[in-house]
Length: 343
Image (cartoon, rainbow, N blue to C red; front, side, top):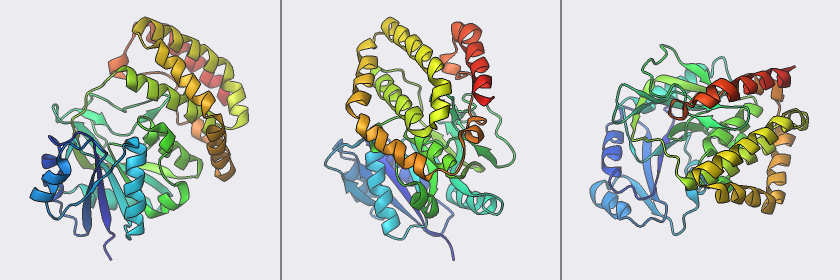
């Protein structure tokens, strides 16, 4: 029997994106799928537009904005309650290949023969540069940074391959993964939720995959706005304090402190020092919640940090943040310290 896929699109001021996204989804060759769209309290008219132009799409108008994590969690819970076998979490600012769902489900099933498959993502290409890669699997740096893998390159592998972190732009979630790992951490609100969700799966023995034949195009542009820096920094720190074992944290503590000093200096020079401080205050204020999540992760993990750590990146190598100081001084130190932790 064909497995059912619920495509979940969470929009926020996406009135100008939904038409192309949904039209591309309606052309899918896959035979058993539904499309759900929710507006995350932006009230931009997208729900009314979809009701009028795409009556087969189920719509939701959320009355509060609980971020990427909270909004998608509402959809994921409802979809699996409604008998979905898979959920495809998809950004609204995308268009998809007509064989996307076929290829994602096929990759999941084929790789499940040999592996405990977690998340599956397609090749995410850039909308404005359709032959250039947005991400074919995100990178996790051992200090909690996450960024797009193979950004702005063109070469896609010929075969499916394991990835460390699936991109939240488009990730296929199975019912098995949902039952074992749960939902996105809503304290993140936005940014890094996909990274944390992937990491928690790794700790439970799952392997994430790139489906090389699955393809979408994403209207992506890298942003360093101050709000993003705040959420990214608080979430990065929560990730490492919740997911690493105690011994690993003790080994990492000197470089964590050094890295925080560097980030504070960077924030002073780039005008968001107050938000860097705000990220610390957020964690201190929510320390009980962080500890609760840490206890939940550590009590259910089955994989040691060393196994996971070996797959993390030791250098910062994201093209849009290429900096000579990082290349000449910071990265060599990070690489050296990485070897110490693995000893």
